[in-house]
Image (cartoon, rainbow, N blue to C red; front, side):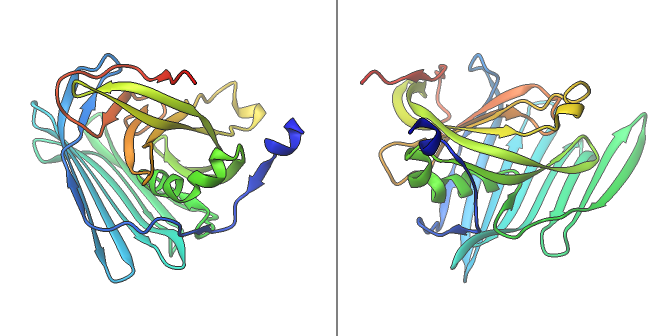
Length: 254
């Protein structure tokens, strides 16, 4: 019975269960101790059947990070564009892009004063492959299945800094409570586990990504903990609420 409940399902394109529309918020980028590292702004808007998402992080040292995503929502959730750009004093430090239609992923990174460039054509499967905030949107529409203990396999695109794609296994880790902006909030904790091939584990370590969605539904974004961009970056926390106070998630006692 346990094996049946926890069997891994290779997901078809994700059926839309929660239509997303306009939203505007001011989350906080923190370290894992809750210290605020950057002010953030979240923008989300719909244009016809396309959902646009923009995340901006502003640091005190003239460092800035911006992510932009485009999704098609009907009849299935499909990511079409992803871009992530880090600048200091308006100079590009790192930039990652994916065009899901052409299946081309590119990366730029400044090393020893030189801006290096990589480009890869990936075997992207529309509706099964995501990057960045795309996983939060995917989870919102997979939530009901994951709460029934399904393990769902998707594909994720990452950068090291060369673009690469890996299978990821998504699971529900339980209902948890956490301090956020001086309040106690509850969220469903989901784990995105990169399935690194056994032979590569000796050379590559990619940490799990953790996303919490609000409970009760509607299951909007609540918290995210993962490396800033590349696997060796510091693990940070993004909280939906930006006030003082941010504590680790703890299981809700039933």
